[in-house]
Length: 109
Length: 215
Image 1 (cartoon, rainbow over the protein chains, first blue to last red):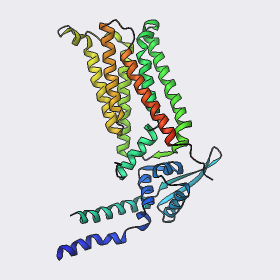
Image 2 (cartoon, rainbow over the protein chains, first blue to last red; image 1 turned 180 degrees about the vertical axis):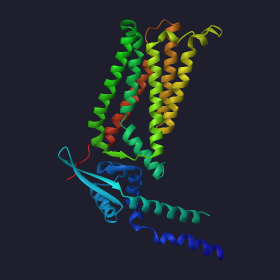
Image 3 (cartoon, rainbow over the protein chains, first blue to last red; image 1 turned 90 degrees about the vertical axis):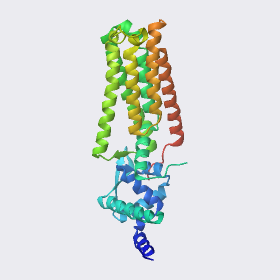
Image 4 (cartoon, rainbow over the protein chains, first blue to last red; image 1 turned 120 degrees about the vertical axis):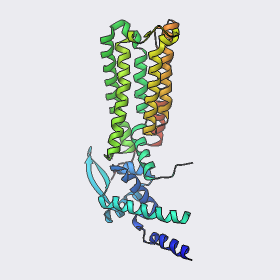
């Protein structure tokens, strides 16, 4: 009984998991952005396999949450967009990883 | 089976995609050692100093040429990435730089002081004294390339170490015992590396066609 309660208590935080990050495409984007300083749309499209439209919509959601900073500039007279993880984004991604790791570890035992 | 995506795996994939997947690094390496394989011939014609200068000029030309090719061919296909600077990554960059310097240093010594290489001691069996520097060079080359492969996670680099190391050893043996004037095994090894690079480049171009531009 006590063991069941302990497990329930440990797994409970999974209910509070950050839903902005929990979406697979956004999680993938954060994973790649966490490994670099900044990257452009083409790189993110190549690595995640998302289309322009999907990529743009997911990055907008991450930007609204304050996790990603988008900067637009012109490169050879063509629009060029770079994305970088903010400090809050990096912290939220770490927190998300910690929560998920703890939850899965408990489910495994 | 595909490797599950973890932050570490994402980082490795990024490094591989940005630096190695287009095969240009392999082509540069192959061309460098191919140039090196014809240098016994040019050394006899030009002398060691001019020969060394020529080699360094060819190397600089190859580096500049392939950098320009990468900028015009790879970047539009895979985009622009700025890597994060962390102490571990700085240490990795320094380690790779030192390894490249060691390899380049060995090459320069081989070109500038060829008379150094064979017969350092007469107290061992003939082939050991004849080839001892080349055996040591082979071990160092295999070691340096294996370390680079381990640090970067790029598997073909292990094979390149063995190809170049053994190619160099076989070349010296053929020059000493069969009267060859040209580093044929090293040239073959370099050609194999160039061909691997070309295959990687063709695969890269097919896999990553020119991306649509942003609107």
